[in-house]
Image 1 (cartoon, rainbow, N blue to C red):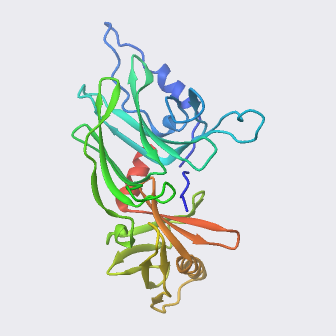
Image 2 (image 1 turned 45 degrees about the horizontal axis):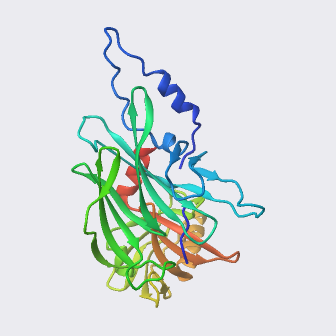
Length: 319
């Protein structure tokens, strides 16, 4: 099952305030660069060159809905990838650029992720370059190293169907003038199996894409030797996990754990998490988060887990 793309919202007027403040200093010298464009700006910016049936996409609170095709009800859409944002000096001029992540759909099953480099120049923010990352790719991690954009992804391998990407890869882009050039070859590091979760600790961030989890009591998860383990809100738990037939497909066995009693809120969180964990059928990644898809009475939900690094980056990007 594809995991659809999907933090804090801000008004585009904030960008106008920033623009009005960039006046030249006395003596004709330009005002200092205000830094890389903020996450709020990127979630309300206008983009061109994306994989949708429109030349221009203007996001509002991270979303865009295009006009219907002909007489039908199907519309192209664009969605900002949660709070994913990179900032760094990509061209060596001493001023930082921002890298935005936008996923677009023409109304079918495709979900095309693009990256766009945005920068301040002459008192305004401009889109410098855009590159298509791919259809239904999942972002495991993103960073800027030595002026390169490095993305750890899940994407379809040579034998994978487009619906079910399974290769873990690292790909690198470099800003050359006003374009993004991808370095070759990409590096394949493994497959989307439970081992991809790794033994680092993940913390529950959301019960579903638009339903954040409370910070306390915390729920954590890590993988080691065929088992998931962590804190379930009150107690410690451990449960076996096995890979299924398709990339990302899993089954989770009954959880064993300690039997300490806690106040009702913690016990309610624990019950909710253990129920969701037991019905988890798929793992993946979304905007640097670990994603566990589970069955609900209404259909399916997707729990999102962040590492300490991801949570810190999100808080920093939102400032």
